[in-house]
Image (cartoon, rainbow, N blue to C red; front, side):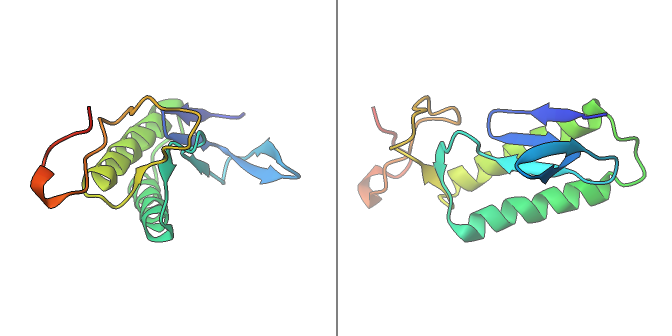
Length: 119
């Protein structure tokens, strides 16, 4: 049975991808990060998200695989992504079709505007 967790920037499925389709699996989790391309992802930041996902999955090993547990992992990853954005390790994709700044207004990258936001 396919279970899933969907947040704004994280989708987790109990499935594996075969021929571009999700095939339900009881042993594989598939992670889709930022499906709307709201952010510009340096490879290092994306790898941090994958490592955090692996750590969260590992910390939940032995637990029942339920939608609730998947949602907890997804919510924790969403918070992790917000932290990366606030630290400047990723930024909004201003060419994205989604321009809702769902994790707060972009910070201006200028020494005189420390802590200021675009208006």
